[in-house]
Figure 1 (cartoon, rainbow, N blue to C red):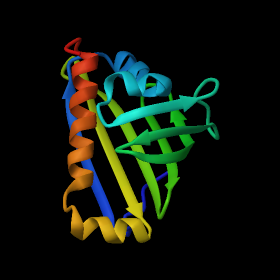
Figure 2: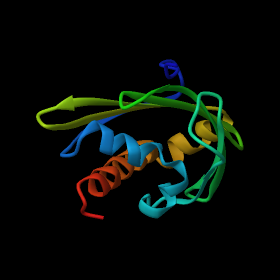
Figure 3: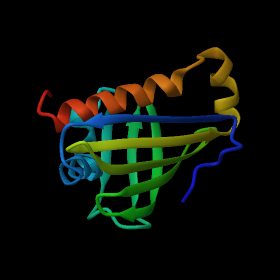
Length: 145
């Protein structure tokens, strides 16, 4: 799965984490534990193992989201699409060994009427959200959280 590069809101971020791809992967794909280390997430629930087509529900920034896993390549790539009131999102995460650690790259596209309202009202909200997610993932993987 690829993000929608023509969506009204598209962001790409990356960070180098001093942990193995296996360790970073384990943290990122344990959806039920997101709420334990992601400050913006208050609820996250996946029933069963993460498999292509699995549905999970989560709450981020007070917004209830239903997502479906679209692609899973162990220790390399995970992607999901999600819907919340007035929005449709595609989110891709990639993990690549680099300099004894893991380069994590994330891309997200957002579209829908809610995004058209939020974009001018809260510029940079997606940039900030992904920065926080990456920082928290790094801290968790490096044992700082």
